[in-house]
Length: 145
Image (cartoon, rainbow, N blue to C red):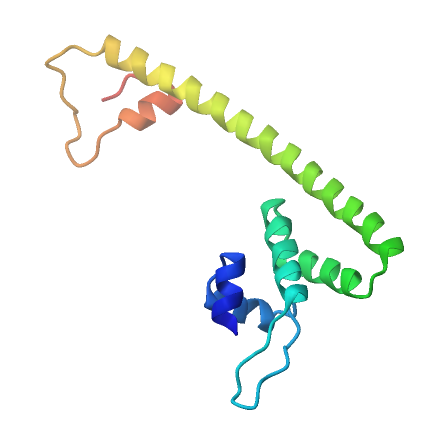
């Protein structure tokens, strides 16, 4: 039953149903009263899915690996897993570079905002009350407030 499977894996019934619909779990046999019968294979498969998700794999990538694993085709699954993980690592490195550049920009503009604050007289007010030009002054370096 899905409730027992959910308990064993820590997944919600809704998630299990979703994984079934996406082909990550095969449709299990049913009892005469219609209850689904799950066994250790389904628990192992769902744990595989959970670990793969922790690595950032997409459901499509996971489905492909699940299909390879279900056919016990170790000659195919290990090289494919290596390919998928290499691509994830490359994507992660690219994102780290982008975030590092973004962080540098934020630090730069925060320093400019601090400099702007330090240069402003305490009684200073904005000239245009409809919208503050502080952000524009920080980005462009102007003193217009």
